[in-house]
Length: 190
Image 1 (spheres, rainbow, N blue to C red):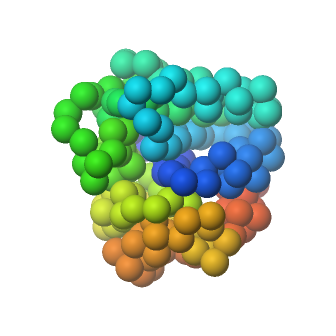
Image 2 (cartoon, helix red, strand yellow; image 1 turned 90 degrees about the vertical axis):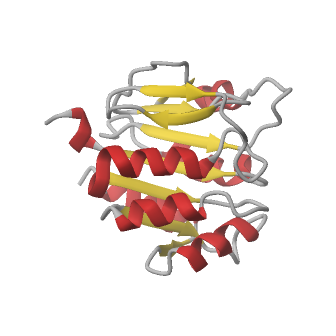
């Protein structure tokens, strides 16, 4: 299997991210077969501690991505603050300091669109809680490429604007609560 067909789980979140990610990521089994790439809006002037938090909580290794970081099955890569994260060729991550998108860098849309370009129907995009529209166009790109589009149920989200925007842009997306998202991801290894 080439890296381009392997795919990955792409997760985007903003306000309320820590809570919902804590319901999903620590419950993934250690033999999870895909890379997990997480883009969370973090203020550009702050150091992110997300990778350290989830590395301590999860059975999977969690790291903050660096430019040219290789993707590996069962590793959670968090986008660093103030850089866009792009899937470069199916095997590596590229970081960019291009202009903000929807006032965000890292941008969920940028990461998801690059995943759709590289992996097509092997990409899985998940939009979680957040207070803006980032992720909606990226999720639409993943669905248009034949990938799997999932949105957190807005009724469960800490901030419902981002899930609602994703559903509006991508009405074919699966709308699931955190347990449903976890069950879907666990079904990948069965």
